[in-house]
Amino acid sequence: EKQSVHHLGGGVVHNGGRPAGPLPDSQPGKMVDNTPWFLLHPQDRITGSNHDMVDELVRSGALKKEECISALKSVDRRHFWPAEAARFAYADTPLRSGRLHLSAPHIYAKALESLLPLSPGMSFLNVGSGTGYFNSVVSELIGPLATNHGVELWPETVAHARQRCGALNKGSIEFTVGNIYQLDVHFTTRYDRIYLGACANSKSKYLYRLLEVDGVLIGPFQMGHAQQLRKVTRISETQFHVGVLGAVQFACLVEPDAMPPPPPPVIEPEAEEVVHEEDEEGEESLDLEGEDEEELMGEEEEEEDDDEE
Image (cartoon, rainbow, N blue to C red):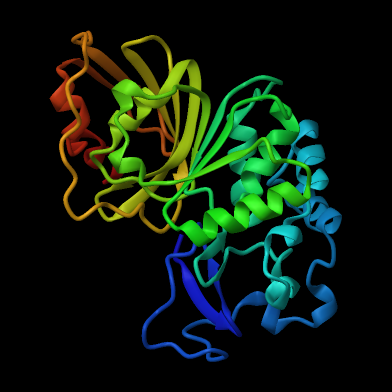
C-alpha cells in the first residue's frame, strides 16, 4: 500500500499504517500529495461518532467478530485524540499530532481480530503504544485484572496515555517509557498476546521469544523494501509458526544509536524452528530447522525475499 501524507492544522493524516512522521518541507494546511478522500466529499460524509465508525468497518468487511465489534464500540477513539483535531478522529485513516499517533481504524480492527481469542486474564503487550487507545480496546476483552502493558519511546506520549486511560477508569493499564530493542528477551515477562504498533527490522525475530507458548504476536516486519503484517504463534519453547496477513506501511521502531548485545541466557536454548505458512499469494512454506540462536536472531530472511519476488 502506498502511503500518502497530509498536514491539516496541527496534525498529519496518512493513508496506510502507523504515521511515518511529518515531512520537513511541508507546511500546515498545505497538501503534500493526493487530496485525501474526506476533503473531496461533503463534511457530513465524515463519520460522526464512534458507533458510526465501527458500523462502517462492519459494512466494509474489515470487522466481523461480535466481541471485537463490542470492544471497539465501548472505547471512543475520539477520547484519545487532541480536541483541536478531533474532527478527524473517526476517519478511517491514520493520524499524527506532534508525537501522538493513531493507526487507521481498519488496522486496529484487523489486529484485534487476528489476536483472538482474547480471554479474561490473558496478558498483553503493546509495543509503540502511543495514545493508549488499543490497550484500552484490548482491555475490554481481557479484563481490568489482566496484565496489560504498553511500551513507548516518548515520555509525553506515555503521560498522555496514562491520563486518557485513567479518565476511563482503566488505570490498571501500565505504560512504560522505553525502547523495545534494548529489552533482554531472556530475562523479562512473557505475554499471551503482543501487538507491534511500528515496523520491526529484519533482524527482530528474537522478539518472538517474548511470547508465552500458544501466544500470538501481530505486527509489521521489514522485508527488503516492503513491510509484512505477520501473525506469529509460539507452538512450543523452540517452534514458531509465522503467517503473512498482508502488505502494510508503518513507521519503523526507533533503533538506539549503539545497542549493546544482550547477555547470553543462563540455560542454552534448544535449536528453534520457525515455520512460515503459505501467504496470500500462495508461495511455498518455509521451514528453518537447526538454526542456532545467533542465526535465528540475526538472519536477513533471504528465503522470504525469494517469496516476495
